[in-house]
Length: 295
Image (cartoon, rainbow, N blue to C red):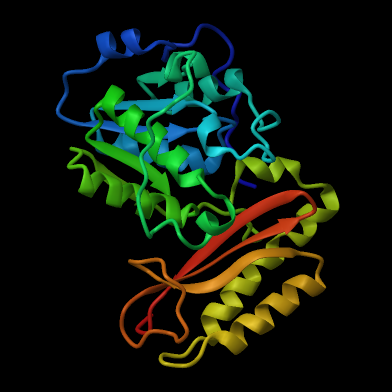
């Protein structure tokens, strides 16, 4: 892996400004023309670094948030054990020239009362991860809309690995007339094709060795698709291959690129998304590839 030396900047005092309260953030809000914002849940890796680098190249000020958002976790999910390493994350932000890092606590973000207000984007959350993680995208939209309100960015950067997430957020921004551009950025992968994820740390050595088969199956499906043909047989082959290798499938399908509705046939002209979520042991991984007949 061509990894970043996360601790290269850990020696000595950090210059990046860490902000923990909303009032501090409002007072520190820059008065520049462009503000690039990278919302994260921390445990940063090279994928996050690619977002920060692009934000740094395109904006006068760069702000990163690190906040593990409880609203997007179901009771049986991994909120408590989600990987965290604030010291390393701050060192990485420092090394990449981030101006401010917003690291609020849960009580700072939401107060001590139950959160009674949520942001819900209809239809786009009906399939893919939204089908099995009920309420997940409401939690994502609620925290991101709140962060947008606090940070007031001109541009916000999200990885394409979370294909459904950035599309939902783009629609939220359009519907609510938020003055921020959603910038989707290419997936960063290991040399064997595995998409980078903070949850990859959960994989055992044996599971990590098998994990690239997920992306390989998606690529085989993409290469086999032909415009206008039924996708059912191709999907059945892909699912069977993954299951034989010990993967448990949450979903694997071909989706309309705009509506995210599952497709019965490969489109003749419009783009589509080949996307899946699988479990390898207890670890849930997601990945996707874009496809168009003219590719």
